[in-house]
Length: 507
Image 1 (cartoon, helix red, strand yellow):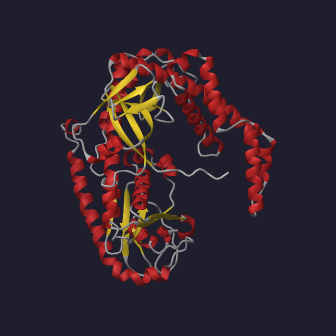
Image 2 (image 1 turned 90 degrees about the vertical axis):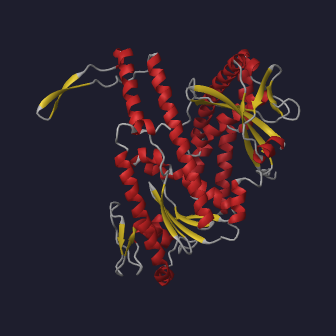
Image 3 (image 1 turned 180 degrees about the vertical axis):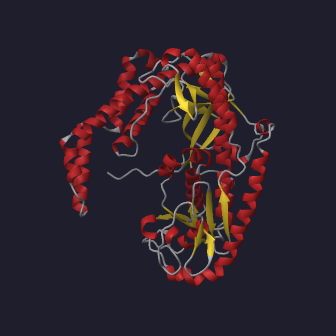
């Protein structure tokens, strides 16, 4: 049987006008969907364990793939193990339907297509665990279930754009669309396109829940959006670009220019405000739940004893949260949401700049941002280098170019010198002192060398050495500009410690 070809689609989002009665009904349906999802996910996890315990699975794991026949046999054994354990998308959809019918209140709230899509959603979460892409599948808590979707626009959750300009879910739930004040051609194109299916979701903004509909439409996005304008602009700029991704900056080297750009530049981090709210939340929680903490104790600190707070008791699960705690938690979520939104906006702009000004054929080292998270968790959260890399790859391919990665073990660009020798240096050394006598910023030099890595992850050192004399001037200029910008940012950061800074950061 031939594999079904995937057709392109795009998403257009509109806010919904939701009354108090409609919100009450939506909340009931989302809670029904959450309970059903947790039930199907529990069954899916059991079936994953049955797959792993089956003889076919254990036999397949012992096979060492040496040729196509071994690969085919291994795939057949894995497929047999899944079939024997009834682990498939269709069978979990069927389980979701049976479960919903047995719980009559669920089948009264959800239509058949939404129920089947919940089964698919649970199957994909469990499948990631089976394939080793996730350590575990998470059950959804009370406020963690944010979206429900259908399978077609013919029944269930339907978008009626030509007649009523609303979303209908079932026979009596009608949700009008709130049209934005700034209507443009992009929204008009998405509104008029053929809708495959709809997705209803909610977000918490400034402590209030707002509801949205996403229209998943057939076809490609509007060709006058910034992404497609970018495509037209870079058709003539197909230059080769080498980048070196770091935790806080990215070095970019093109044919005629280079740059060292920080992630999430000028984005407010709200660190002091978040810390203040966290302290208030902890004080409130300790006052409301004294039995969940160990008793306070005296601890020797320096030359004197200091009173220390007791830790949370092991195995504690029941917590009582006061209204003050919930208020502080809402404020903290708002600050986190604003910080994430600002960071995404700046990093998208930086990705656009790289593709537009440098080129769309990009080469980069294959780095693990997940490994960075274990060591630089707070910095990764604030700057999002992984998001920048994924956006850059998407935009380069959308502009007609490509984004290729190569192994760091084979190339070791940060250790390589222009004569081919490798000298290991610590992470704190940010200046590369080449054996041939010059100095260059470490990330810029690695980005320069990445331009000369071939498809087999092999570095052409001789070609890099020949082109160095032509490239060195604009690399030096990029390093100088970065130093100047860093000095200005540092002076602004010192000014930020004045008392009124907390108020200025809120705007």
